[in-house]
Amino acid sequence: MNILVIGNGGREHAIVSALAKSPKAGKIYCMKGNAGIAELAELVDVDYCDLKAVGDWVDAHPDVEYTVIAPDDPLALGLADELEGRGHRVFGPNKRAAEIESSKAFAKALMKKYGIPTAKYEVFSDHESALAYVRRGNFPVVLKADGLALGKGVLICENLQQAEDGLRQIMLDKAFGAAGNKVVVEEFLTGKEFTPGEEVSVLAFTDGKTIVPMIPSCDHKRAHDGDKGLNTGGMGTFTPCPFYGREEADEVMQKIMLPTVAAMNAEGRPFKGVLYFGLMRTPEGMKVVEYNSRFGDPETQVVLPMLKTDLLEIFEAVTDGRLADIKIEWEEGACVCVVLASGGYPVKYEKGKEIFIGQLDEGVLLYHAGTKREGGVLKTNGGRVLNVCAKGRTVAEAREKAYENVKKIRFDGMYYRTDIGIKYSK
Ligand code: AMP
Ligand code: GLY
Image 1 (cartoon, rainbow, N blue to C red):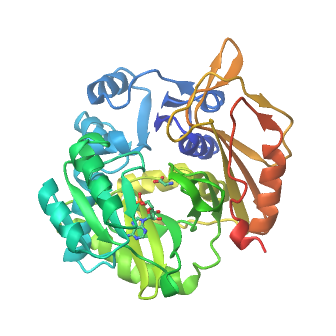
Image 2 (spheres, rainbow, N blue to C red; image 1 turned 120 degrees about the horizontal axis):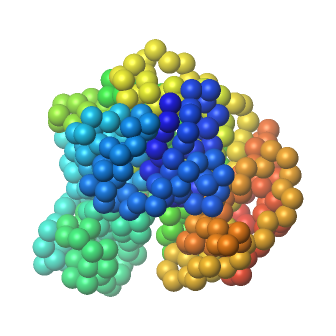
């Protein structure tokens, strides 16, 4: 079966690598891909947010029998609807289902209506009322632009001044564009005794009837060591999470996952694809921080390498509504991913720097994110450039191996966090 994968990051490199292992997979195309993906797939240079252009390309390639949509923006725009409308098979939720990620106001209202544990909140579409509300409120307070904002539309405000500035940025200056037409003002969640709550990402396959969680992983969203600096798309991940055991998984299944699937069905928005639960452990139990309508990046880069079952078989079972018939198995042990980023990311950074890669140790997985090949030379082409992933019996072992291999890679301005998974490596 020939497959088209939509996307161009490290997540897509991990997805393409897993699909390429399937005995059922034929030729793989990737729109738009990167230099690493090019070793496994034929790259297609079409803008995947141009729904008509993608539809026309798939129509013109009858050998492509299946399309996997990985990133949030084409899902939010309705690429699944576009392709299904033209009679093609797709992995990924339709536009109405993807709103669970693309509108935070929708996601919050869903959780409130169906009693799914999350932070208390109010939604505002005019600046004056939002301002009046934060002036009465407690601090810290969390401001979230309603729409998609590359993981940057969330502001944690310690005091009134920061909240006023934040509301101005989101609602008046439109720092996140139309995503800021509405704003969610949310209670700040913490762990025990106001320490930061432990966060975990749990991705799950669902066909709208059955939901099967993948192994849990932890992201590091801030740019610098010790969770300092700006929020990014994610600077590194590890699996498993020591604080997310059997008990937490059962609680999340009963109180969050099953109710979410049922809620989406009750709203006439059955969700088929990967549903991502961003969770925080609080003194009142696990709560939802965010939903995503897709695989996480860089969560996928530590989760999929541990998958023993054929990913293509799982995808097709989701598409065909027979996920309950499949047994999904995982390797034991740990995996750590370190993101190598361009100097200045997530704000302003240069592209086109030559990348040097030495001989990596056996078993190390190097996923490409923002890379391209120019006249045979590998160069940087984005903020997050490469993902160095390694497995081990423990997070500590995997971490050591990943960092040993990070040392073998360099490009001008390269930076990375040195503390991925360190908290759980003692
Ligand atoms: P999000 O993009 O919604 O995942 O938010 C980015 C990060 O902001 C999360 O990973 C949390 O660390 C933090 N965050 C978001 N909402 C809250 C909240 N209500 N309370 C505490 N921290 C939050
Ligand atoms: N790593 C967070 C995300 O993919 O949204």
